[in-house]
Image (cartoon, rainbow, N blue to C red; front, side, top):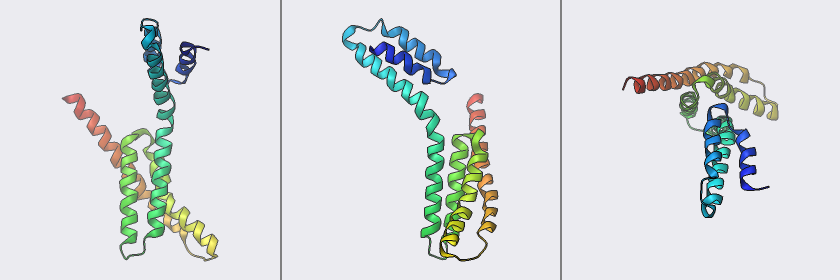
Length: 164
């Protein structure tokens, strides 16, 4: 199997809005001198990987990292201000994720807003303590507010760019 066949297969990973670029890259490969063709095809494979795989994994991975950071901040906080720091991390991470993917702001708000309750529920089950970890689900509200604030910022930014 030669490089052009591998690139042809890799182009199937591309989203619809990027397939034309992949087809153009593949069509131009035959015009590249033989000495540079391997580098050209390697660049095409990198393009297909970046646009086809990384684009699909970037947001879920970012959300998982944000949930992990929030859970860690919640568990290691021992000062009087620990709850405030946790709330700040919740709002900031939800806003960033809402800004990065406004269509998925609801997911960031729900996932991050329920993280603290989930962590508290997990540790309450481990220790056998009773309490109200479910009452921490109220943090879904600031999670959604932060995520939609980030989404609104992204929307306004796009509107301003169109005006200029």
